[in-house]
Image (cartoon, rainbow, N blue to C red; front, side, top):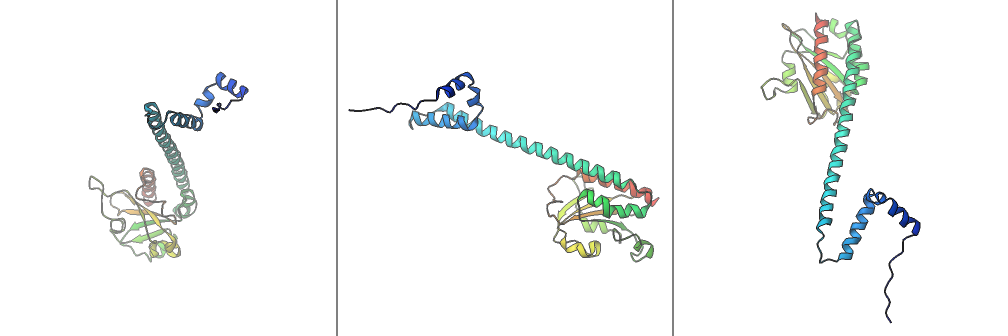
Amino acid sequence: MSSTASPAEIDPSLRARLIRDPETILEDAEVMRALVAANERAMGANVVDMRGLAMERLEARLDRLEETHRSVIAAAYENLAGTNQIHRAVLRMLDPLEFETFLADLEGEVAAILRVDAIRLVLESARSAEDPALARLGAVLQVAAPGFGRDYAGARGNARGEPRPVTLRRIESGAGWLYGPRAGDLRSEACLRLDLGEGRLPGMLLMASRDPQQFSPEHGTDLLAFFGGVFERSMRRWLA
């Protein structure tokens, strides 16, 4: 005597609900995958399910599109956050009415807003860095010999041969004469070239971080270029 296995019965209430609202299954990716797999097993290994293959490819493409969508959204939020950060730093930089306060804010509030561990303003000059008038302005302001910016950030230019306004790079440690005791902890740096106006030697604004990823060469420089443009215009007014 032989017997055949009867198919598993579905709970009547569940069956009625699925018939009434089939989108419940269609919108559940895991359930749909399980149903397609069960259908393939029922057909056997000798049957090629072209519709199933097409669905797999469409599903893979959808996954890639969703991942791209998430990446674009994340990049947009990151860019918006960076823009707000730069705007806040610019507004803070425009507040001081005295140059000493302007420099103090660079190393204080502005550095905190930008989330960097050190900021240095380097002015090229034939004047001695030991001048007492410069020493009283604090460590944030440093004086270097003419040509410092070209040598420090590298002479490589852009596609048109012009010096790059912003250089981002990873470093083993910061320059001791620039950053002092904290130099050994610094792992990345942004170098912003400054045009201080006709008849004046150029300058450079340096930002450094303990995070080696904060100023990576792969990152965009548009926001920092904007910040540098505002900064150099502020410096022209102070120097005038």
